[in-house]
Length: 150
Image (cartoon, rainbow, N blue to C red):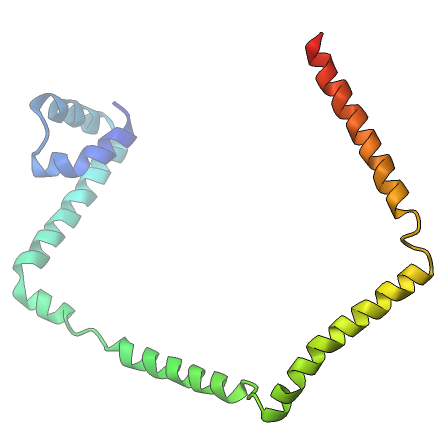
């Protein structure tokens, strides 16, 4: 049995929940392995500490005096939110008035650019290029499928 398995089953060994065969195997390993023997002692100490915490009511009352962090955190969040609201750009009536004009402005710029591109002959050979690409694609597809028929 290796150390990893022994350490995994150690809590069940301490609580006495293992079968007699498994308990014997773990006990033999612990006797031959000083590392696992130390691990067992530490696990027993932790187990004793947990059981003491469960039964010791004074210890429970001492642990119940946690500071209230929620109020401070919520106040800080509110401060951040207030600062964000103050920094936010407020919409004005002037800004709303020009919003529709800017959308028409974009269409006008696009139309002017299209007209200029047509005047300079950018689209002159576009139909020929598309036809040529279509022919290349058709030939390669025909060759590819033709290879499967043979």
